Length: 350
Image 1 (cartoon, rainbow, N blue to C red):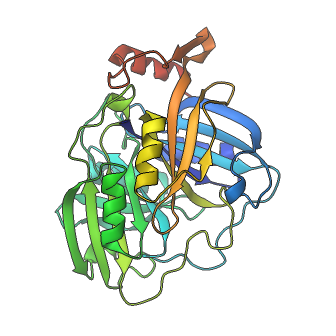
Image 2: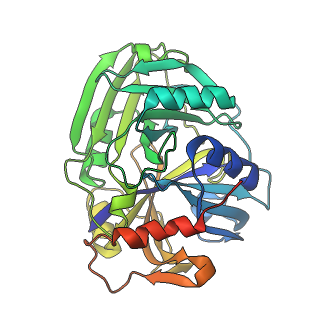
C-alpha cells in the first residue's frame, strides 16, 4: 500500500464559487482538477440515510501541498454547529497551510483584508505560524512548510496537515502512525501554549503532539502533494464536544481529510486489523465525470472522517482532452514533473 500524500481537505461551505474565489485570493487554490454537480449516494451513514445532491470542486495550488474539496449541499441548506467550537473539541478543527515565508504571507493577507487571529507567533519547536479565518468561520494555520514543487511567487502553498481534537493522545498517536504513517514526533508536551492565544479556549491546558512521517511519500502525485503534519490536541480541563455533533457530513466546516493512496485491498486489511474498518466503500470505481477512482472512509478513534482515494483517471489538461489513466503503472513511481506541471493548464483566473 502506497500513500502519496494528503490529496485534499474537504470543506463544507454554503456557496462553492464564492468560497473558491476566496481560497484563490488568499491561498492560491487556482487549479481546477474537477467540478461537478451530482448526488452523493454512497455516503448514507453520514447523510442521514438519504442520498443528497451537492456541487463540489477539487482545487489545487501548484506550489505544492494538498488541495481543497469545496463542497456545497444543493438539496438542503448546510448548517453550522449550534455551539461555539472550541480548541480541543473532537474532530478536524484547523487546516494547516504551508508557506515559504510566513511573515510575508501574514503581511499579504493583512493587506488583502483577511480576518487574522492575532499575529505571527512560534510553535513549541520555534516554527513561525499564524491563524486566519475564512468568511465562514473556518480556521486555517499558515505554517512554515518544506519540500516544494514549483515557485509561482504565491504567499502560500496548499494543505500541509490538520489540527485534530482527540480524547486520548496515545490512542490517536497509534492510529495516525499505524495507518497513515505519522510515526515521527516533532513535539510532544502539555500545559498552556502561548501560540494558541486568541483561539476559542486557546488558554486551556492541553496535551499536544505534532507528528510527521519518517518515510518519504511515494506514488504518482507525491512530488506535488509533498510531506505533511498532523497535530493532535487533547483538552485537559473540560469535556470536549464532537464538532459534527447532530450534523451531517457535508455541513459547514472541515468534513474530512483525504489521502491519495494506491493498494486499496491491502489498506482495507490494515484498517480492519487496527479496528478501523471501512465505513463507506465505493466498490472499485466511482465516476465523477472528469475524474474516476475508488474511495473509502474510516473514522479515527473519536469519529473524525478520513477518506482514501485510489485515483484511476484524472484530467491533466481537460481542454485538450488529456486524461491520465493510472491503473497500469508502477504504484510507487512518481509521475514526471512535466506531467504534473500540466495541471497548470486548468488554472482558474479571476
